[in-house]
Length: 596
Image 1 (tube, rainbow, N blue to C red):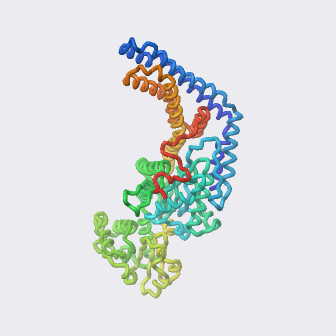
Image 2: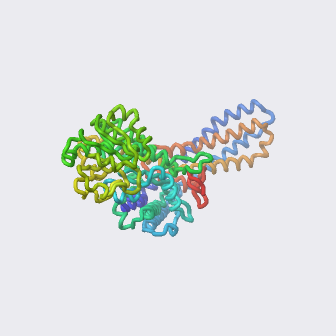
């Protein structure tokens, strides 16, 4: 994973210097276009305004118009000099900048145990560009015992993300200013954004944070972690939301979980609310998650990837049906079922169970009997079955289990609630299917005579047949995703230009005000409305002069070309980024977060 991130980081230094200079040369004609635009305005719109003003106060305005013309001429000369300075950018200067970026990237990629010791360099380059990442683990590579070490309850997602942001804070600012958590029974993922020039430090910070939270050493955790940066991170999210990375290919439940992730990261505490913790999503991560939701819907609309697909709960029911005769010596329609828990997963279990056997005998066990009854009374659940379904309190769980053939567990308990001693000495065989993370059924239960115990990892075998039927749709889905990843990256790259465009606008406004002030004595004879007309005219001219640059930054083009344009814009105009909404400094909290 680290080699993948490293390759992405130094890609900018591997481009031909000639290609970079060609990009700058391509940008220079736009300066000429600005000059031509100024001349046209000077001879066109300005002439119309002057004629109009002459008709208003012909005797008094006299020589004022020549002074206004001189003001506009000064603006045109400024643009002309900028064009000349752009042509002086040499290939050797470009090489120095990119070698510096490469040096910083390589230095930051080395592991660091102490986050506070990170050296946060800020060399010349596109320092306003934000990069996206995802670090996590899933059912593909990590066993459930490792996944449950990092599992985070949905109610704690925002707290976890905020802890990460603060953990990665150094004396030079926030290394990870944006973060969002997605934690389900089959995966744990952290989506985050960082300044592009600090991305290696950001990844190291996240890895260190996960080791701290899980209590696992680098050797214990790293083999199971995956890390994606840039294109691969966006592609990963889009595949996740489309169901391509799910245990059950094309399942719809993951899309609702991505929606929840997006919703939480955008949350803002209401006035007077002390319990609610704000999300840490920020503009880039929130936009990426929102795009993931849209792509997930698009893929399911344009392909058949979700046709006949089931949730993990449905896969658990399929496992029960396929193993009933072997483990229990009776057909699945005749078994007595106990479901422990009354949350979303249990509701989905009931829907899947009643879809196959509407009249099957079920007891729903939960700490709150009223909540369990509410699940059975759900309109969709009642529409599928449940004539032989009842509820029981958690204190009756073991009594209900003694009368049951199959036990499904789906609670939010962080510790096992069923141990080997609890199922020993039974007179009838028992099948237990644990779809919870962390596990509700303790290891060792599968070794008890007459007991067959399964966890979420065992569901992989159940869904293999369904996955094969949907493989033909995967290529169609990936083609859609590939196109959408490119579109998002173009938008993402364009955001790096925003602080420089703001700085350019501020510089132009400063020139306009300075030149206007120089002419103030000669314009003092104007009435207020006429002075406002001149002010509006000069603002309009400045806007028109820079409009080609604004449009250029919005063009649909390769990300590297976009970066070259931003770099050229910065150096041609000698700009320092201007953040209209503020920049993350040592004393400021990330956008969307509560200040300490």
